[in-house]
Length: 296
Ligand SMILES: C[S@@+](CC[C@H](N)C(=O)[O-])C[C@H]1O[C@@H](n2cnc3c(N)ncnc32)[C@H](O)[C@@H]1O
Image 1: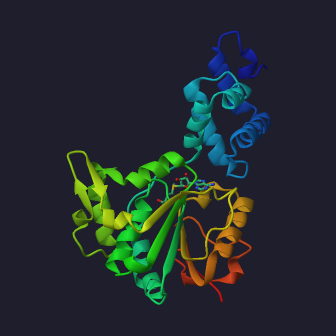
Image 2: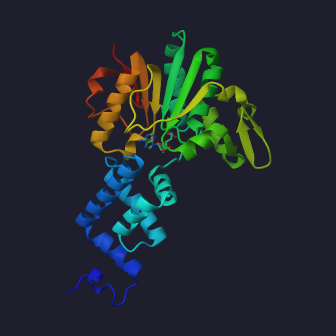
Image 3: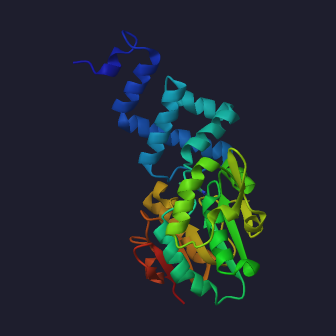
């Protein structure tokens, strides 16, 4: 019996036919996706070859469906010849969903268990790797201000998505988000008026300059760029879930080499050091909230 895709050209449009093939022919599709990722890397320097294949497949299929390509090689050709399309695909592959005080209980643990350690340092360097549109770094700036550490702290907030970084630098957020952000702030142990940290107009809020002045925004790619400065705290939350095990391992070495002895690493709730080469070189500060300390 003929497979659905073998009926192409009889009673299917070019697009539905290609999509059906895409779904049926998994091995060839995986190969074509790998070639497409090679094209993206060699032409533009963005390396997604070791991201989780489920994530990559889902995002590429999404764009493939929207643009109604006839084949993945047609999509690859477009990547090579159309920079605007390539940059759209980059946005598709980089998920920038974030919140202020995301996982408030994590921030509570940070306030209670990490801030006292930071207070012992004469100067403090914090690195947010994969900061998206900046909400995480602004949350940290608030925590630092409330702990009275703003005069000796620099927060480096990095991402490889320049569009997200530009939005982060502006620090302008829809005021529709503020109800949830305020609730997160309060659950994280915040005692101030959250509305004191921004100025609002009808549609948006802009974060206070006093929060911005501690943050240095920079474009940094965790896959292709090197070790950051020697830092006292790294937060890389909800980024490594998109990487395969080998790439997670590689990035964990980068973090290990970027941390001072005794410094702290914070990962997202679905991430952790289990199975990582560097795991024995850390002790748990808070297992539940994925907070680790680099051993001396
Ligand atoms: C889901 S957001 C997480 C934002 C924030 N850390 C949080 O937990 O709310 C993931 C971010 O990781 C960034 N990212 C993905 N791959 C990256 C890479 N290779 N280098 C730097 N940033 C990357 C994406 O651009 C995106 O902004």
